[in-house]
Amino acid sequence: MKIVKTMLIPVVALTMIAGSFGVAQAATKTVKIGNIIPLSGPSASVGIQGKNAREMAVQEINDAGGIKSMGGAKLEMLYADSKSDPTAGVSAAEQMINSDKVALLTGCWNSAVTYPTTQVAERYGVPFVVPVSVRDTITERGFKYTFRVAAKDSWWTRDQFAFLKDMAKETGTKIKTVAFVYENGDWGTGFAAGWKKLAKAAGYKVVLDEPYPSTASDLTPVVLKIKRAKPDVLFLTSNASDAILLTNTIANMKVHVKAIIGSGGGHADPAFLTAVGKNAEGIFDIGEWETDLNKPGVDEANAKYNKLYGYNLSGEAVDAYSSMYLIKAALETAGSTDPVKLRQALADTKLCSGPGSIFAYKCIDFDKDGQNKQAALVVVQIHNDNGTMKRFTVWPKEGRHAGYTPTFPMAQ
Image (cartoon, rainbow, N blue to C red; front, side, top):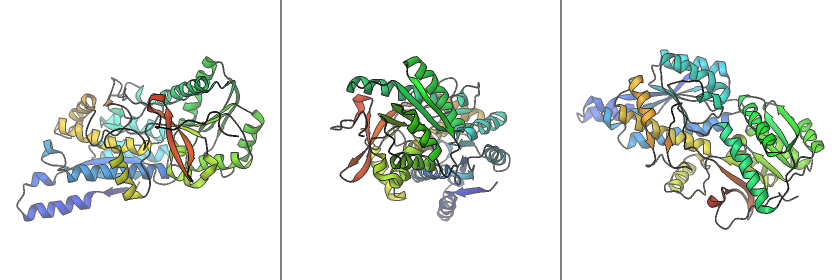
């Protein structure tokens, strides 16, 4: 497993500068953070976005003086490419803990990787911050060292159905049938399990339940099944490449439904709108964050990220960005990289303000299982705004983009 270090060069430079002016050596200490994320493979795009967000936050933290309670220690980022492979993730965690001596770990975006990798960290007693990975059971195993910032998938599916109920009521639209199409990993199957329970409770008839491999190069057979099933509403859980493939194939085959509801991930990937263009018109998607969110610091952070990397922050990138400030806050409290002290500091931290608090909800605040109990979701609709495809927040209604009226049912 190849471990890549970044942010080290500025620290070394700082060390040389500090030494030349006789500054205390304590200012050159670093805190190693191991990051296991997909930098190649089907989830590479979101992995790279998360890496960029981490580096923007860490640069800000280091430039602002590092961890003051530790003599200005700087954060040193180490990266390992999980390739969305659980075995690679576990191997990277073992190496980062035993060889690189990281203070804590973050990752891994793919729930299938995060689940066994957090188990490794728990065994060694090393804190693990999970910015994004939604499988419920990641924080339901009685672990003491795992802390998840994002909402878990049962909350995502719960809010997808709450949105559907509210929009149907608001527009007087009758919904009777639903179809579930999802990538066949832990993420997709976890969502599907939630959908099935919620559909039964809501009285919707499930006319299609179709998992597929996200590495598929042709999803025409899946789209044919959707067309034959004729659902009122199509729920999707897709990575970037398959979200693009499904959307363009659905448009080409003229499949018409009352609503398509994505689950973040590939539908929230900036590459998605670039690749599908107007074929995305009217699609709904759920996520933790949007650029039109009315909250202090959002515009500034997004503008800086866009300037650095050429595209907007996604919800997943915001989770990664905020997680670095969460780690900073915990290190300030712990004043140490001692894993027991750092673990307790993470459990006690309530991050509600400051540059890292650009998330959609009030605070990062963990429950006894390490789940951020205040994580909340929003639903957007993709719309052609004078020739540019944009995401408009539509739900909850009180957070709706000012002046925007959702198209529900979707235009046929």
